Length: 192
Image (spheres, rainbow, N blue to C red):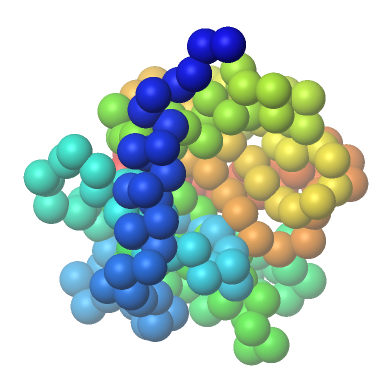
């Protein structure tokens, strides 16, 4: 039986990152206008996400002005109400919507060889999990949405830009998934 020798090391890095308690997401927008990502932070996995995003990369986090790209009403058709727009400070080019009752939706952006975006993309397109995803036309150059109803997840790319959505109720139809895709199309239109 062939064993993957890198798996124990990778698992140890993820555990260390998850237990470090270094970065926290306060939900407040960064003062310099950071972020273009929309995802749910209810799972508390932000520390692991931030560590994975920075792995092997000494570049400073690139942030965008989420309030210039999105309006509070952009998530009304997904969450059932508008949400305050702010930066998701644990990841490059990411934004977060939060409603008055605490629902969140995060839009994650990435560029080029962003490892986190590539891993998510590969999960939806080449891993055994790809059976849970369906192609979504009209979003970027290529997009997929999670069709198994467990949660709202949409991944897309356009040229060398990446965008993914997480949070909010899971879509039941392709038309509902496209509402999340419209957020990514706004990211692509901004050029990051």
